[in-house]
Length: 214
Image 1 (cartoon, rainbow, N blue to C red):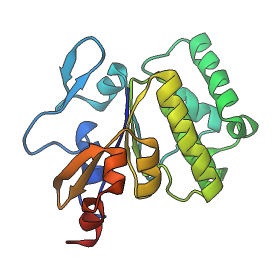
Image 2 (image 1 turned 90 degrees about the vertical axis):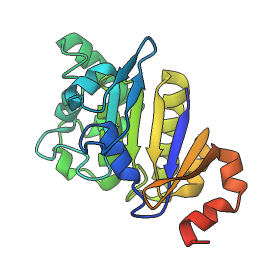
Image 3 (image 1 turned 60 degrees about the vertical axis):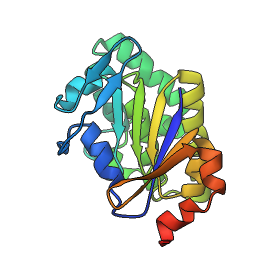
Image 4 (image 1 turned 30 degrees about the vertical axis):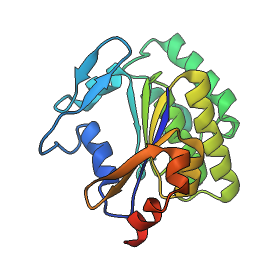
């Protein structure tokens, strides 16, 4: 039921953690477990499409859309595994167009024609098409204007609170990430340096040391 922030300087390993969870980078050791609300699954060697069926959605920081497909087609791709029925998928598309009105006005445009902020919204909307239990977001603020950044982060809070989607977010905008998250883990040189309640992490000196060196 939480938003959890994974923070740390460039090169600390944050994106690698997300890729390991998704099976894109095999972990050298240890386990990756996912609790779906009923049972715990060991997913370290699971195929990515099987993770999608379990309820895990990934929104990467780069190459977030399928450029030669329309906005609507991008959304339908997100429903391939969990909502294959046409009526179900179309109903979900309509719901998401209500939530992301700018996408509704662009529904027949190729995704490559969207601005960076619009592509980011499309990537998040596509992730929601599969009704995920957990969303992994890598740098959702990348390339966004301050106004759009505020809108996206408010949307993430709404998705967490109203839709009951757990969120693990990697974000370089530390203040914004700590503002919307419940807990934070701070990485440094490939490992977890410390963790805690987001408010406590924001007020402590250790966060500054992790980024600037102590």
